Amino acid sequence: MVLGLAAAVLAAAIPPIPTIPTPPNVHIPGEKVERFKLVFDGNSHADRAPSLTGQTGGCDVTLNGDIEEGVSFGRGKGVTMEFVRYKQQGHTRYGFQRSGSNLASSFTVVAEITREATGTGTLSQHPDSVQCPQQTFELNQNADCGKTITNRAEWGLKVKGTTFSPRPVAGTLFSVDRCGEPPPGSPFTDDIADLFYGWDAPPGLPFEPIPLHKMFNSHYHAFKVEFAVPSAMSNNTFGTAPLQGTTVDRGRNEATVRFIRQ
Image (cartoon, rainbow, N blue to C red; front, top):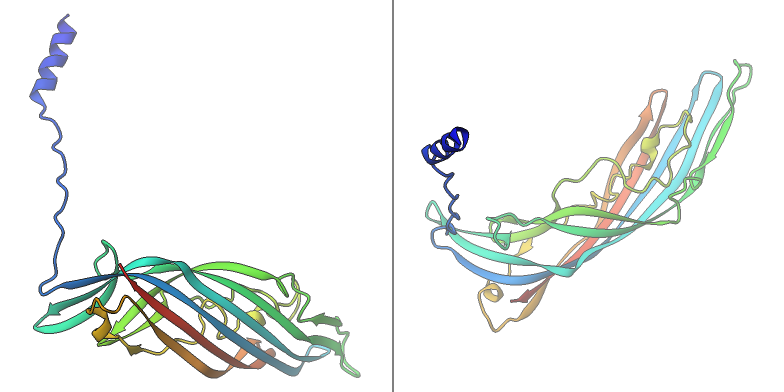
């Protein structure tokens, strides 16, 4: 009985934890918002032509080949996106945001990746030299070759002034598809398969004008903006000395952003 009375007194002495209030919606000064269903789709292509000629230990080394990657990507079901016009330090600014997220426009993109490779890497005995661990590998022997690999990556709509561009939020340096990679234990390095324009870092799409006259005009129920990089090229290297080779990397990328007013 004494214990029960003490517990009751203690409970009465400690006030209840207050309920955390729901934060109010914060409006940016001069803000005007239009809501759209955003549909995004595109395709990219990457090509790498690696080449290596040299000597290491008792081996003559050669590698020549071609690795090609095709990707179709998009957000087919659409995502609800808001286009925002607001004032900042006396200037009119524009931005895209997911519903309820202040100027955060990231969304998940699904990519279907297919890669093929041709060519051969060879270590052969150099005349009158020490013993060479001779080896040959085909660039198309990796299990990923010819398969369709599904990958998900975060993209967003980057705004610059009155222009915008769909971009990966954070591209990686390593290709998702490993077709073209040498087998484990090979003296050739696996960065052969890291295509410079491979997914998820295809050639960066250009900035195109935001169709402002359509964004804030309800007569335009649906419209689209197209982006394209028809050709990009870069010369790079792979491997480490003395087995360091060169590559010619080419890529292209195109995408369409469709806005459907909500």
